[in-house]
Length: 420
Image (tube, rainbow, N blue to C red; front, top):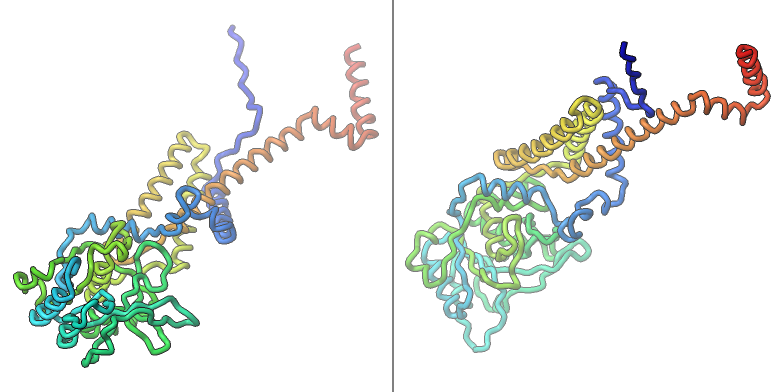
């Protein structure tokens, strides 16, 4: 008869597959630990700076991804509220005629996105055009906050010469919001002379009375600009007469569209003129397509739930057949599912979730899970090593020599007598 093969006894202890309850308890406490770590670890270790340059990491927002997704998903339509008149290369006389023609075309408001300096000649035709036009809003440039207030830094030179009292609007891009990508606008600026509304706020209220009140009732210092799904008609002063339908009952914004000093970056493109940022802001206010964004507590809850699911899958399925592949599949599906759900909510309900904390906490949770599993394996193998007969005798000889001599010497003598 063939000899029976001896079963191979593993040299080290392997962890047994935990029960559903054990996995849930472990995942809960590991997720709590990951949340705490995300709050107290240095920001550089928990941000995208680990993978990309610092300036890009600080300027990243999931709302950019949602905006691009919404633009690709929806059919882009031409805006029916704002028309842009490009004044690039125009003389003061041509600008004055453009303002006069726009005024006689039945526009609801004219916004000037240019600060005029004194001319080289004694006569400036643009002054008369602005002074006689209706519903003209002049620009004001404000400096950053000092003692809680903004201050005027630039206005057009001819304002003391005007006989009519005209509205003013601040043309600051992004207000006091930090970052290189323009995502937000400030509806109103506090100055020592009183509040000054933003240029888009004034123009939107002239076009659709009451919309500014709705904006202020929201109570947000900064509002997100809705850039998705729209383009604007851009014409030159020479095209005003031939396209009266683009001006009648429209807000007309006049300014440069190719000025390098007035180029900004938005979630869709790297270069967009300031006048088009104002146009998108006006349409957001008039159409009331505001973007609401998730609070800190909602971000924390989503991060905890996502981390719990991933860690639970890792703890419960890791030691099962095909467990590693199953765990990775669950993690990939969960992350793509979260992004897809966020984009869907943004498109249908204009609500933006910030999943940066979710990614940070989930990564930390997986790291803590691996540490816990590693420590458990190491601890069990150490205990097995300590319980082995050779190690037990060695430890007994070192710590309790008298007891060792009494028991093990007698044991050795009995073995010799048995052999005899």
